[in-house]
Length: 451
Image (cartoon, rainbow, N blue to C red; front, side, top):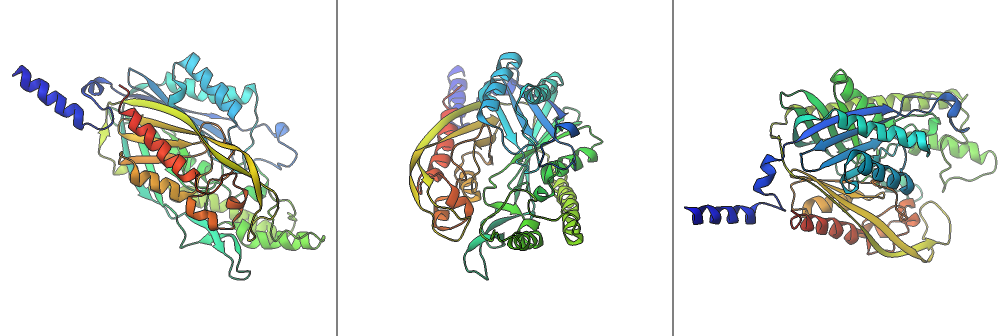
């Protein structure tokens, strides 16, 4: 009988995927969540910002299994620079005991946020994690997916100029999946939800007002649906070539800006000035279009929020325990520097540049795999990762844990597109896609050897 038991254990150990073992059955989950308002005061707004449309937050989820812990953090900001990522994760590890390799620090990538490096800003982010850890309680974790058609590939051949430009490419590659990770107490009370979607948060960028854009509107809608008993954490998917499907910067407001600049003798038909620069905000037409954009983020927030709620309602497979595992590494490949100008439509010229360095990561919570990249990644790269991943429950979280020197990261086939993302990318063709996909797959393989 003893020999039979040992044989069965050996078989189970061999077939359980990637390091899962009998010992994880006793590693019971605890989870806690918090959000902290990080909106700058009116007096602290930059000169180009004209007010506050809606509040900015840092939201955090902490998960613990009695052996180790992890933190999922998302900040309403455009990017999180390397120095901020390094200092925060080091402090989180030293003071809260959450290993830096188990931390996902992600911006919503709102183009209407304000990055305010400094002690107060970092203190607010740290506070969200510390507060979330202080709320830890026994929990179950579940995973599900839904579908949302709010995003669209943004690279098209313009029907008038017959050149590459930005606009809604309904036939272009675009993953409509909404990945949802739900955290609830053992008696079914909501704690948090972490949802991953591939769409740029750029809808109200031309208003020149502080806003969490669509990610903020979606999280607020979900939280309000639970009377704020839940923290809803947006996760930035592979949106390097994904825009909101209804986006005024490629429609009426763009044409108005082109006319306004042309009246001053400046041609911006192949350029994109920042924010609302060049728009007369007293013009009734401009006012109308901008008000429509304000309404648009609320509409998108409701629709995306409802899809997340739909997935949560149907989630039945919840796990009360399992493994937490994190790993990170840096990959490097040849880089380039552009030597000419122009936003799109014309071939770029380049010289050899310094190597591109990407920080890749893997976080496992049970059998849910979070693959991370610290850059803006084209959607097909994430789709390939999900297809090749040994974990059925896989998502890609981008712009996470600092910011690379790569610029946009097109998939290999997209280097034939003369779009602004490809032209501005520091990646030489033929390296980045494999470096990312194979690099994260290697981390997954290595996770099975780490017990």
